[in-house]
Length: 95
Image 1: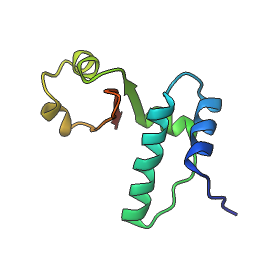
Image 2 (image 1 turned 120 degrees about the horizontal axis):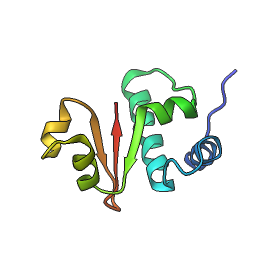
Image 3 (image 1 turned 90 degrees about the horizontal axis):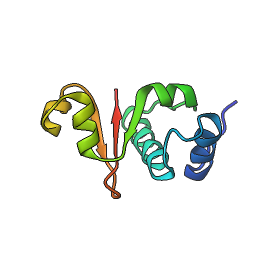
Image 4 (image 1 turned 30 degrees about the vertical axis):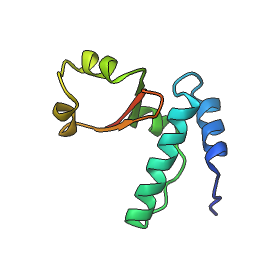
């Protein structure tokens, strides 16, 4: 039996399971990203907050990501991870 959840339910579930890990904007962007993968592949995603935590990382800025990774540009990151830039300037990576 499967239950479809809304974006706000996803954000709440992530923040309850792994508090302080993702901002609401970041968790919402993860939801949107996973929904796009579902549409592209036809496969349904099963909510797994720990899996989300292991797959995605949120950074306060692109500069923070580059500093931590030791890379000098986002182009260098493209081969290693998917980088999602958020409207607030925060950045998510997906391994």
